[in-house]
Amino acid sequence: MPSDCSIVWLQRDLRLDDQPAFAAAVARGQPVIPVFIHSGAGGNGALGSASAWWLHHSLTALGSQLENIGSRLILRSGETQTVLDQLIQETGATAVYWSRRYEPEHIVREQHLLSKLRQRGLTVARFNSSLLFEPGEVQTRTGTPYQVFTPFWKSVSPRLSAISAQPEIKALRRPATWPASESLTAWQLLPSIPWDGGFYHRWTPGEAGARQRLKQFLKNAVFQYATDRNHPAQTGTSRLSPHLHFGEISPHRIVLELHQQLGVIPDDARIFLSEIGWREFAHHILYHFPQTPQEPLRKVFQRFPWNQNQPSEWRAWTHGQTGYPIVDAGMRELWTTGWMHNRVRMIVGSFLTKDLRISWYEGARWFWDTLVDADLASNTLGWQWVGGCGADAAPYFRIFNPVSQGEKFDATGDYVRRWVPELARLSNPWIHQPWNAPDWELTQAGVRLGETYPAPIVDHAKARVAALAAFQSIKVTDSQCD
DNA sequence: TTTTGAGTTGTTCGA
DNA sequence: GTCGAACAACTCAAA
Image 1 (spheres, helix red, strand yellow):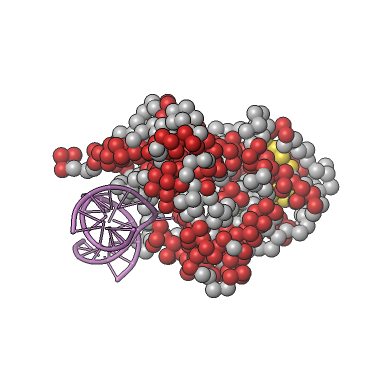
Image 2 (tube, chains in turn brown, blue, orange):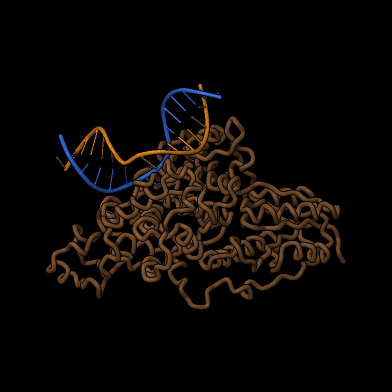
C-alpha cells in the first residue's frame, strides 16, 4: 500500500556528507527511498571496465553506510524514466530529488525527466553537489564562456573562501515497506577474468576511503605538492580523482577542509586547489562545448593527419611495450592499478599523439576503459590538451622527450623499476634509454633488447620532426583563404 | 571597436 | 654545465 515518501535518485554522488538531495528529502519529513539506477546504455555514458569495478565497490560501501543509519540502497536497472515511473507507482512517492550531472547526454535526459515528473505533479528538485561553480554561472564580462584556464580560475577563486558544505546525513526515515532491490552481483560489474588483483590494495572505493585519502594528503603531501606531484615514484598527489568522480567526496568538502586545517593557504596547497580548478574548468568546457568528446575544440585540427590503422604500434602502446621505459611503466601502472600518475599521463599522451601520431580520441577511449577515475570532462580536456587541439592546449612544439622526462622526473629510476621489472638491474644512466647502454651493461642486467624488453618502436628524434611537419601541414596559410 | 598582453606541466640549439 | 632564445600564429579576455 503506497504511502507518501521521497525518492533520492543517486548518480555520481555516492556519499552521505554534503548531500543536498538527501538534506532536502530529510527536510521534507517523509520516508526516504535512496535508489541507484544502472543503465546498460551505450554512448559516452557507457561504463569503462575499471569504472565498473569501482562502481561495484562504491555501491557496496554506500549500501552499508545506509544500513548503518537504518536505511537501505535500492538498486534498479533499466532506462531511468521507466525505472523511476515504476518506483513512484510502487511506493507512492510524491517527491524526487537528485544531484545533477553535466555531461551532454545527462543534461538532455535530466531536463526531459524534470519536466515529465513536474507535469505529473510531483515535487522535483535537483541540486549541484559535484562542482564548486556551476558552468552556467561562470562567464566572461561579455557573457561568453571562458576558454582559457587562468582567467577562468582568477574570476572564480575569490569565491573559494565562501564555499560551504552541508553536514553528513545521520538518519533517514524508512518506509513501512521497502521496494524490491536488484542484486548488485547480478549486474556483473566485476570482471569475469580477474585482472583487478592489483586494484584492491591500491584503492578503497567509498566515502570512508575518500575521507581517509584526503586526511592523509593534508597531513604531508600537500606541503610539497608543487614539486612532489611531478615524481611518479612518490605519493605526491592526492589520488582523490576516482573518489571525486563518483562523488564519494565533494569538492566543497575538500576546499573547506583545506581552509580549516591550513588556515592561510600555502603556495603548494594553492597549486593543489588549482588542480581542483582544472576539474571545474573541464566540466565548464564540456558544458559549453558538448561536441568535444568527439571533435577537437580547435576546428583546424579536423584536418590533422592522424595515422590510421597502426595495429602493432597501438598494441605496443596499450600493452606497455613501446621500448621507452617511462611510457611502458605508465601504461603498465594503468593496466595493473586502474590509475596513472598525472605526469606520466602527459608523457604517454604525448607519445601516442606526437610520436605515434595516433589520434587523441583513441587514447581517450583507452583511458576511458582502463581508468578508475575515467571522467568524460577531465578525460576529454586532458587528451585534447596533450594533442594540442583543445582548450588552452599545449603549443605544437611542446613534444615530450620520453628520455629527458624520465631523467627529470624519475631520476632514481624507481618508477620504471617498479613497473618494468625486466629493466630493474640496469643502472641509472641507462634505465630510461636501454638501447644506448653498452653491451656489457645490458648483459650484466640480464637485458636482451628485442627479447626480454623491446627495442624502441619509433625513433623519437625522427618522430618529433615528423610531428612538427604534421602540425605545419594544418597551419592556415594564405592559399587556403581564397 | 581596437589594442594589448598573455597563454599548466617542453625541447633544442648555440653562445 | 648553464642560460636565453627560438619554436607560429592565433585566440582569448580585459582594458
